[in-house]
Length: 511
Image (cartoon, helix red, strand yellow):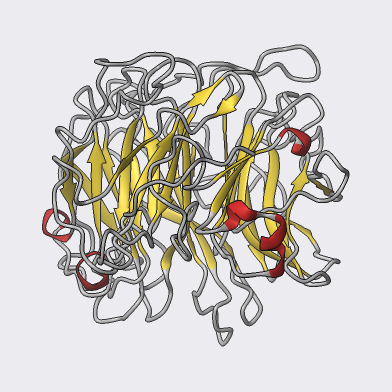
């Protein structure tokens, strides 16, 4: 990594079908609500809902991860997903599970190229108090249709995840159902809904769901009439009306290098058919990117957006100097939705951000929002998987930008890579450390831990790292100095009981 320049302001064979280690049974299902419940349009406050990532109902959030390139039963790139469970001591690798499409109770059969784990979200779909895991297999072959795709739920319960059902399958060649997925309560009825894409058409599955996978209403398809290419999806209550909204980053094929943020608002009947585009202060469309996430960064009741733009080298870079090496754009929510006129942009040349922006670093390839020091503001974990460390190409790193009442700031940003003191392992060529990042409060102490995936580790076997947090040294200015590499640990195929070949473990986490 070069010295920072002046700032700019502006997959594998599974040894067994399911590897399960027992863990304590929850005394009862968790009904913990988010820290702040938004009021609905009727002025009422929604009832507390279970945590979206607590699969065994013990009150501690859990982390699920993917290995979509894994070989299962000799079938290359069939894919698998796994989970480690939270506890008062944080994430515990002694409590883990691995699921493939050959695992008992999981629908379908593992086949070459399925990419089980193409996308993954979590929520309590059947309203039993346990979060469930929704897994996409975007390249699943359905009948004679290659890459038609599928969406599967693995049910949560007192003993963790077990059993499942098919939620949706594609019915056309290259439909790609399950390739991109988001979850939210789009009509404000307290039941979680699912959105997935198929041939750029938006498919909405309305909750609550039954154990056979059936939704509360027939699948609704919102047809793409504008020839858009959807790159990523996320959901959050962007306008504070008590209903989640859907945000997407898309490429508009009618305009060269036109990457946009599209918003479909939630309403009494669910997602709207029409979308709006987020604009800049001058009325022109805000340049977007390829990744997007939602979270509460500035401490108000409106969910905010963070967009990562990692692809560079287009003419529009002339208007976006921070595009060099990748950039992230913060767009705050408001009563009228995302405020593109108040957007803030950062890259590795921004003041306070470690490193130097270099071509193809991939800054923003993965994103996650969480409060790492308990100050009430969401911090942003940013993956930089193609960062060169000295002469080591594509070793990768992760940076965490602090959140404040005015949004994120580069001041106080901290970074980690495999050459950082106390981080297990050694930075190597093509590790892609930071290919996935997740912030989660696995011990419920009010501060999120950082979990990092490096899908390129050991010739694309992949591995995972966990960074704890501590209360020491925290100030309002250095918002994320609570993060430390001390006590960090890594785990992978040896812990999971899986064979590593080209698994790409750590490609993504549940959202």
